[in-house]
Image 1 (cartoon, rainbow, N blue to C red):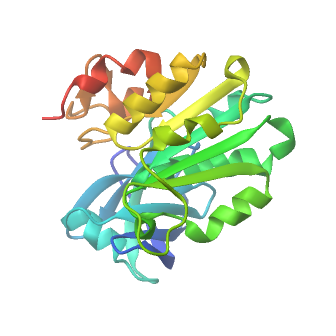
Image 2 (image 1 turned 30 degrees about the vertical axis):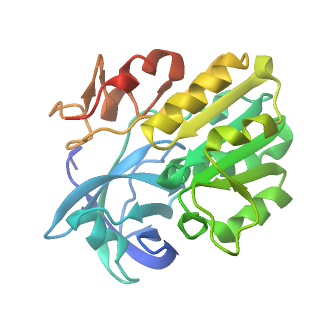
Image 3 (image 1 turned 120 degrees about the vertical axis):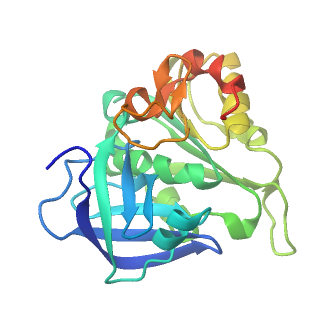
Length: 267
């Protein structure tokens, strides 16, 4: 099997997260792809339509991938019902490295669909809760209806994470914080000298959050970049950003290295 050959996976469950986003539970029909590290992605293939890079939102032999409907391929994937076959190749890219920061405080900041690639790193830490310090999760969404994994938030709190949520626009039933995710940073429970932060979301959100955490004294801040990935293996060059091919050298990179590149708009 070559690096470009998708492995057949069957959708065994579909959970609707929001009006345009769904989580697919995928079981391999034969030999699975190699083990996925938190933060890596796959190229998911909708047979007869095409493929797209999608973050893995739960790792294991049975994987989960959370897909937002933003085009023909993602729409075909996001609307896949149980029983449908999809193609998966990978995993690709650099992971979060949460397994390498035992003993440190952890800060996760996810904006919108950016919470999906953070989820496996958070779950990894919560499953090994005794090996980490304080764990804080900051979540931002456009509206309450756009929040991912709403049924899991209290479970994450029960397992030892501090979970804080904000939305850009509230509705009549919302009684939580309203504003940018940076308004939650004062609630972070972490020692900047002994903490690692993981950030994923819109680039402006990552830039502002990363900058604020660095100004607080935190030196280990990691972000997950997204560019126009086509091949996943660094062959085509479509995802080049400065010195990096994001599919190969990212998507996770150090914020201090990425900050100058975040001003470069994708063409």
